[in-house]
Length: 372
Image 1 (tube, rainbow, N blue to C red):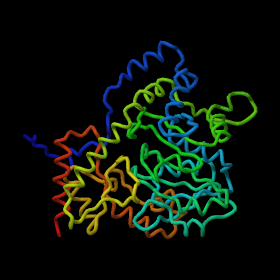
Image 2: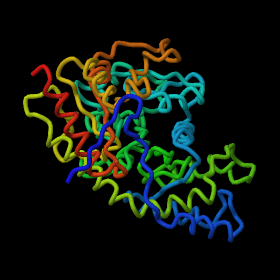
Image 3: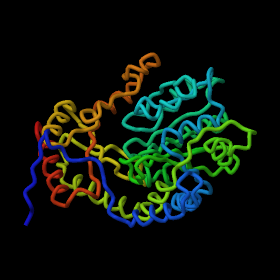
Image 4: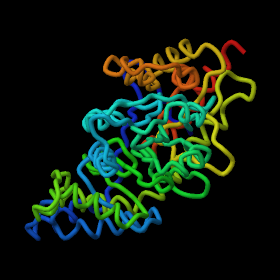
């Protein structure tokens, strides 16, 4: 018998996922017993090797946030005053703040229609001798298949920096997001699939780049030869990440099953469909992202009133150049603006009970049918 579940705007469904116990307390106790709590703790290299194995890359560097990961990557490519970094108009603020931290200029570009992938034509138009990197963004854990962009940039030497902070386990062309560019940047903030409270890491297949990233994020290892900052991850957080990494596969599997249950309930001729992914690409379902075929603002309001506020309501999400801090960099980005206006994000994490998932499926389907 199905339990009756009801929600409203005063009691929205929590989009924060609390992973089940995996003996993190014992892992933290082990670090406390060891006595080294800093980024020099013995658990750090174990965590970095485990990350590299999981993602199938040679090198991982753990840091204290996703913002630190992005900043370190940009510094490694000599980003500074007088240089430029190409960023997607779909980017949230944390993606682009590190560009400003470097003193560089963000150059906002459009996406392809109905896609998170950057528009290569717009990128080519805005590439200059000052361009130090192009940031790509699998937002909400949905694939940004930028193979056309990679082909465009290959002769130029301009590196792709993947902001995969929401895309742990997202699959693009048979590989994980964050392993396709020169470097992938991840967050392990409280809301991410792999969460350590605060934290992040970088992935790369480039041995020399990995060494530069490690050197920069560890104060140049205090050798006095190179400049660096203290972006090290604390030992207890690495211990938590090492334990929770073991659950990541199962979490993604459950997220995909939950998303499928909601999608299967949608009417074929309704007002909502899933954001498109190329054949073979798979979201990790950080969120389930639906696209409104009509009346997106009305549907967003209906979802919010049901206790399912999308990002535009919950967090005020909008295109980057619509944010006050970045209006000076505004440019025509009709595809990204359409994407931001018509997408609706729903939670589907494993912390939601089967009864809650069933309720979300019924409620979303009912909203999708209206007006059809």
